[in-house]
Amino acid sequence: VCGWEYLRDFDVGGISFQTTGRFCTRPGCGGALRDTLLDWDDALPEADFLKAQTALNECDLCLCMGTSLRIRPASELPLIAVRNGGKLVICNLQNTPKDRRAHMNIHASVDEVMSGVMAVLSIPIPCFEREIELCTKVQHATDDGGTALDVSVHAGVGDECPVPFVETCTVELGPACA
Image 1 (cartoon, rainbow, N blue to C red):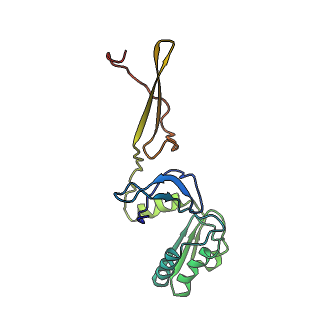
Image 2 (tube, rainbow, N blue to C red):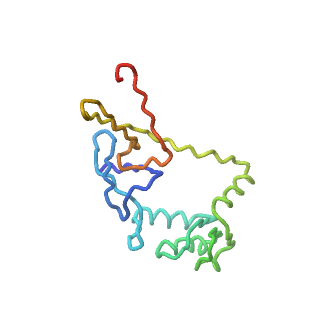
């Protein structure tokens, strides 16, 4: 509702601008969040498409990295740079339909190429550190006169979000809980 965008490092569970089941946490909003993942048949968002065209009209260099350049109209965008005197460099493992229009084709992984570029520029690549809020859910249940605890761990963004790096969860009961 407020237009705020959340960047996620996990599968949001949708495509084609569907609601994700999560809600905006900004004060006064609370609107349903939608994914911004395009499906093959989805139109590009108009505002983003216009920004891309403007940038490509003015750029000296257009880098296309990790794309097959097969889905129109996005696949035509890099040619705007070429028509306006800019250079086109395509980095993709496979050939693309735009390779013949490129000034340079690099058939390698994007990670390898960018690591080399960053090294030449003497720019260190910071380690990726995933920060995620973990929540525990404890349910008390009485079974045959005793007490049983059911403990689960989930990501702070929702019960349905996986936490793949958590293999075990240990619960230590203090004297008051024993």
